[in-house]
Image (tube, rainbow, N blue to C red; front, side):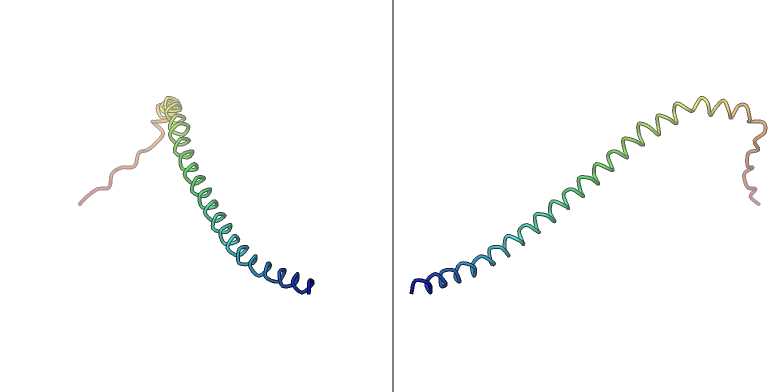
Length: 90
């Protein structure tokens, strides 16, 4: 009788474990998806902030520092450049 009781106990044990594993598996997938969404959101916000900083500080700063050189070139070549005449209205 002793071996049959051992089988009965062992058959009851594994029947309860898969439901816990299934529940734990679903919880893990939800956590993984939420973590991925959080990482994607954080990286998108960081990308926008870096782009905004780069555009404001580097591009605008570079264009303002090159403005005197641009003005000098326009003064040198101003007589050779033809400006478009405004369209005539009839």
